[in-house]
Image 1 (tube, rainbow, N blue to C red):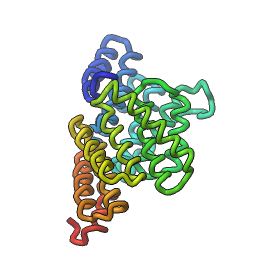
Image 2: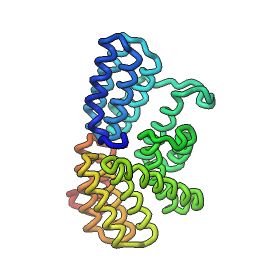
Image 3: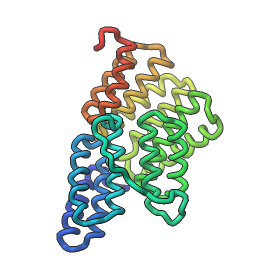
Image 4: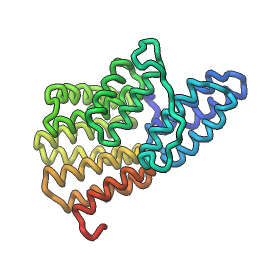
Length: 291
């Protein structure tokens, strides 16, 4: 991951899955399958296409009877379903089962905690996001896995939201420091995958300290970096954050509307009607014509 874009690993991993199954190396194939879905999620691949792919693999897994992989895929499915429409029309009754989450020997619980952190962040549950992020980071430690860095990125943004609302101030400041340091390390090794995340954390930090012009430059740098890397979801996120900055801090509704419209377009391309709906409410509050 340190050198290749997240997108570059998707097809080789798909091939690894197929080769593993066709050669009788089921464990290798299923391992590749889990990482295929992880790369798709992290790269901002089309959510609707990803959901279809997950359902295809879930059907296929009935033949191979791997309970562990089935639970991993159901966990991915729940995350993608939430991102699409909050699970309103895309959820299924079957859910992942991860056993005793307090058991140190229960390795799959890592997936439960980091997916819970991701879901809570995108759905705006700041307190729960902090809880699950800390659980995830305590398990993954200082490892160089992409998942650990993604969770730290969202944890940092979440800490910034908490700090903005004067919640858990000291812990939030420390969380921001940890997240920015992690993204600096990650961006040094993989600018493609992590520079946009670093710039967004820096922009949010500067917005709190009232460093207006630097904050704007960093928001735009994050947007351009995400666009260059093809991370449509994080391009939308940076546009959304910039929109809120102009609305709530700079008092410039015209610029806020411009960024919110960009965010809406990105989230629509990603396939997240949940986020499109939330951004539409912001747009309507600024532009009564419903542009």
